[in-house]
Length: 275
Image 1 (cartoon, helix red, strand yellow):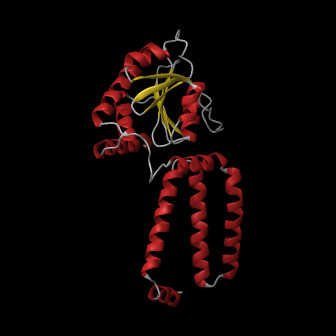
Image 2 (cartoon, one colour):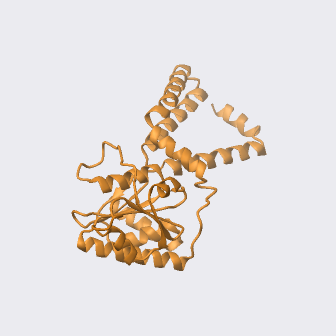
Image 3 (cartoon, helix red, strand yellow):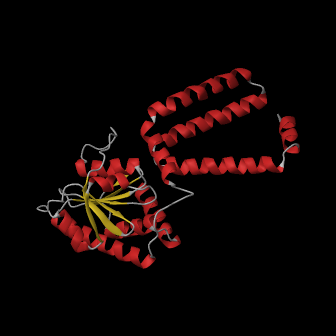
């Protein structure tokens, strides 16, 4: 095994190093796409099988190597069947340019700060009055389909407009508000409801819709509960319930226009939630 490794290192070319770097970069990008999804567990298992197969090959363990190769082949066949939603999301992200090629219109830091302030004020007010709300913030993946379904607003993001849209007697209070490029684009948009069977039965339609949208895109979805007044947000197929105004503010600043300080604060919050 050591002799084979030494021979491989001696014959290693510059192009081989470039090849390894490119493959490693692609794997890292793939990990970012499937992070916080069920597909991540499968990829980890697949990686373990590949490592075992490589070790068995170098050590001359032909039976184990053959079994590992067959296991990998079976997993590759099962992948598109079991993880169809995750694969669809991955392909949609590839098509929309998520990751290396983002087409999202950038807004200034001052504009984002103002938008976040207005959203937090609206959430605070609706939380106290127990007014249900559902807001979807576009990130890298375009939400054109959702925008076409709803009623066009094309207005500035203000707390007054948001509260008027979600006021129970408003004709547009059902459904979600789509916010993209720093503006409220549409209201009363219908979101896909999560089909995840592991979701708590306590979650109502509004929260399941937020979760469903976060499963199919990289959007940040903010929810205000009509029953409890709790503020929650959904991201990457996970829902974080009962967050504070400070947490919501930090999350929005971090995810909609990342800055080093905001990302650091977000990581601290996530570590606190996991305890």
